[in-house]
Image (cartoon, rainbow, N blue to C red; front, side):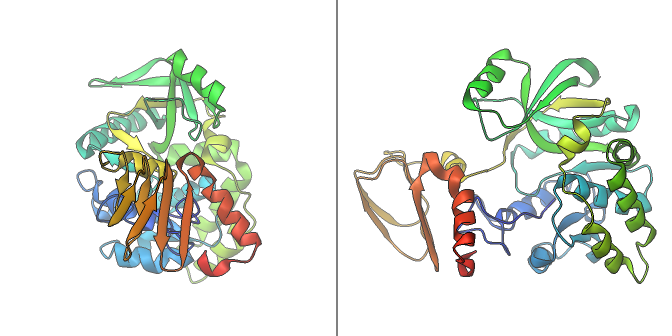
Length: 351
């Protein structure tokens, strides 16, 4: 899943080049790393990317080996359930028994071998038990920016990897609730990574989101025909926007969660980027040449210019040729709100 409007990492990210199309931490973009780490599991011919027309040219440039037919373009973003359903109906034409791995294209995964081992375990569970498998992350702090999964008894096991029955899905909590989740010991962060058979997820969509299922059937009938794109455009604009968590996972009875064996971060803000960078003696993450006097805990990223600063504490400074962001690290989550304000004030040239 490689759509998105690129708001949380403004001004580096823009509508045409959101976070997943940027090298946020490493050489290579988030999208490229998402595809590259799948190499031990599947050939590129089995990888599908769902995105928008605005981003398609850049995706093609970044993934020249991706078959053109495997880049699926949504006419308009309708959240994750339609996106996943669209991928499923295209995959079903190639293999009705296929096991489908759903990956957001903008996550940071550490330890690729453990990542592949986790996916292989999920693949076995999904294929043999007709389960909807979600990957959970052991929480390390009371995060308010993630959804949570409460788990119960062990449902199945592959080698040393147990999969647990899911009791409940919880939306992003306030701090008090997140602290309670952490203390309880039976909650995991919801990574947004899923594994299931194509047939299983489409059956669940048919049961729980019948209108979406009817729309997907309409699209499926026209795949490969001359009016495929016109049908996709017509049908998609009538589809209701809904997430896969709310629309399917919360209501399905065959969901299990597999705790991840890898380190994960969804890089939801510049503060998360700061935490991952190497720090100097004053705990500053200095990405570009800078002269700092009495500064502590800052993220400085300003290509092609020198930043000189005095007395800053826990501040983010992100510079681009046409825009500059300065904010406290603790307010980095509000960059999305800032972008919405700029949109209302018609600063469209920097969005």
